Image 1 (cartoon, rainbow, N blue to C red):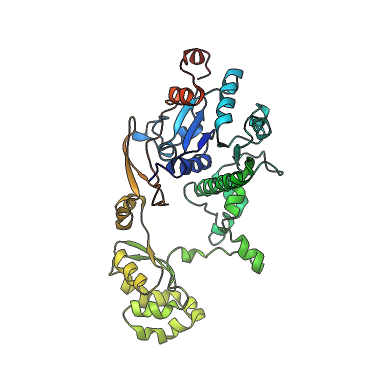
Image 2 (cartoon, one colour; image 1 turned 60 degrees about the vertical axis):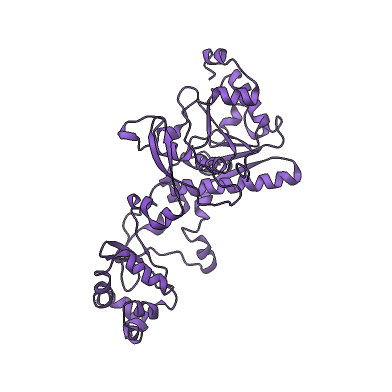
Length: 399
């Protein structure tokens, strides 16, 4: 068993945002040598994203940094001056992949664009992650998660009953984009094995989100019908589908195709399948409140989430219960699979962080702590570039 599936790769991470950090996290978890190249004066911007330990802002204790940058090395390097740029070019010459999320053209203006650095390393995979891509009329637009949700169409389909739309929780768009970036880079590496040549990979977060079918673009292209937001009444269960309260929380109910017979059996009376409200879908929608009061609520109100979901899944209905973030670490399925991993950070202390969703039998992913800003200067520069005395570089403000 080797140390990691990708332990022969050197990745330079010049990213500030969540998508880039999530992309390189996959490489780090799978054993690659991932080196964060951070500004010498302030560290990468991801360090400024809270929450922070004890609610006290600290670049070493931000939750996003601790989770997404685990297992990476960090060097502090100002590459906007000649000495720093020279050091970065020497690292690029040895790298397999460079990942950056600067505004389009910024690194090119510094002489560090793809066309510039491919002369140093013609096998380099140069991965650019930006909100709208390297081309197009919107390429220079600034954006946030909300901006991308609106432009991608996902915000519109989450509008409820004509009210203000609601974006996805957290930073799902960034994580989707990070996964696409990782997969694209791996594809470029496979191509390099054939051609022995690198290439520029241009990842648009907008297109990653829009192509994820949350706004159902493929449904529209096939049917010509735009997805219609659910009416507000469907914010909770109605007519045998949706989210229903139970004894200790909520259950998402989805009987599935032909599932009303199964639902009747789960409710304790298979004969209900012949009831007009079970057989006539239009009538059930019309009399949804009556259906819920008579059949659903008496059953759900006397049972726990686990009891209901277990009964439904046993009959092939894809029910699920709604877990809150504080419940996830003790969820029996995740506990058995040892999904959460305990790590000890010198400043943030002991943490339980999500592990890898992918299990490799021969080269399992490995998680470790996130680096402090610039802590790997000596290790990286001595191992990769043979530098032993960094004092002059530090005095010049390069490191």
